[in-house]
Length: 280
Ligand SMILES: Nc1ncnc2c1ncn2[C@@H]1O[C@H](COP(=O)(O)OP(=O)(O)OP(=O)(O)O)[C@@H](O)[C@H]1O
Image (cartoon, rainbow, N blue to C red):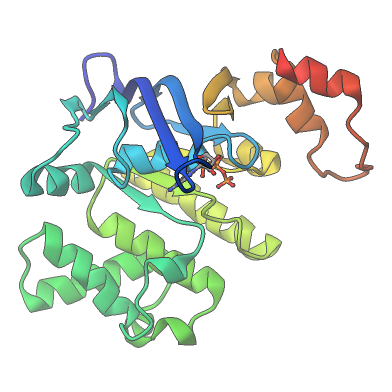
């Protein structure tokens, strides 16, 4: 379900600050500074930016792991409460799920893959034991694993297989939106390509919407039609992937693109001009 605009995510004027340190040495960081963004139902929007630009904070606010100081989020046509009740939290989890960079964070090392997926199924659907087992097998199949993997503990799985289980867990809730936060960053390049292909197939088959957070511009080209560029908590540029990466409008995007490793790439020391331009 999307709202009348066809957007499944509508974010307006989100702000979030973090204050750290002891009294007298306090430091405040504005992780999100007036961020407004919409994501069309069924699309894939990439969010890029250097480390600390606010990408993860945006994701965490969206899925409800962090509370914004100001601003609004509308998910699948429903405004998201800042202090949600249990039922609202559960409804949000059915709308949006997140896959993290490190699958170990979402998998208990003493729990089999089947039981990890079954836990999410049980939280969102009323199923008999036999139905749940069948759904676990279906989900394993959708992420390219076999029913035998249901009995495996995380320690018996490769990094790519663990990430596939984390994706199956997220899919078990049957969400409309998947937020993928550096979801392939920890994988070897060949495994990365397989998981990216898998994610593309799943999006098409399930008509899902992706918010794809990455620092890797080559990944952006493979997965998304549109991209937003974040810098110091603000969105500095948004457009089609081809336009933003091939003909960036903002000096910061040019700097990001020009410092990304690629075939034939030679590291180049940033000049004073680069830095001054990017401050614009
Ligand atoms: N829980 C927190 N406590 C204090 N500061 C935080 C916290 N979470 C994020 N920050 C700060 O907010 C800013 C944005 O961080 P965030 O993790 O959202 O950036 P990012 O673009 O996702 O970076 P990375 O790519 O390194 O994950 C950073 O300056 C970070 O140090």
